[in-house]
Length: 345
Image (cartoon, rainbow, N blue to C red):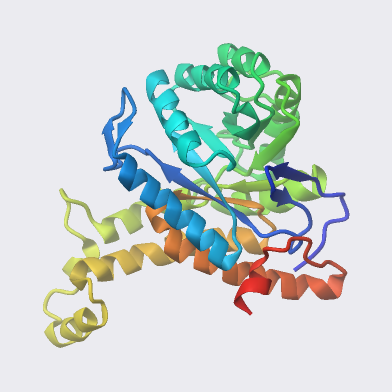
């Protein structure tokens, strides 16, 4: 473990603090909700949802956050302007404090979300996701004209996934015709609370540099840093074949054929049957990839589907306690009253 010579910035989102030296504050988790094919979404265009189910999922995150001392943001995904309005309105109705990420693959929907949160007075809780090399002029203007002052700033360089390549995007630009670095664009958009995202990439396509970039971001810029490292496992072709799908049988299941005695013992151990075995094989790297980032000082872990909160938050609490114990000899100590070390030891 280590401490950074660069002064580390800390952003405050209604009491949830993110950033600082490793160990000073608990790692913040961000759970994705209303993602593609999420069963609680009844109409992805209008944003009609199963409100009771959605609230139960978020309440579970809050309960576990209170229990173990690892705070949560929520990552709201939408592809249509009307859906964004519906989702954000719903979230504000059940939680008027927690910060939320606004995420979309549709630039127009994300631009609309900037205006909407400004109009309804919740922009101080909104985090734009993300300022990246492909950001359109319309979105830059939408962000400038809004009251949103926080954004994910993405260090993604498809032409050069190395650490220098990722840093070039942040500082110089050069991706998709951008003449300015992403940090400069963020500043010009009025973003005073940037969170650097090291841009998780698939195995074999610079995934190791996505981890090393955590060290670079914090050492060079001093800003809170993190990423969606679960995307590494989502994009891992071999692991997807191992897990299987409705159309393609699981390679893991196929490998167990003919092993009757072993399979009997295995299924006895995993009460969920073969599906439980497959889920365990998937879940281990899906959670573990985030812990690698934590050991390198990541402040924000966007861990994917909100249903994964149990394994993620318990693993993260363990990691945060280990980190704090490791950095105390370096002169770093906890600055948060709700750290897992006070709750679980």
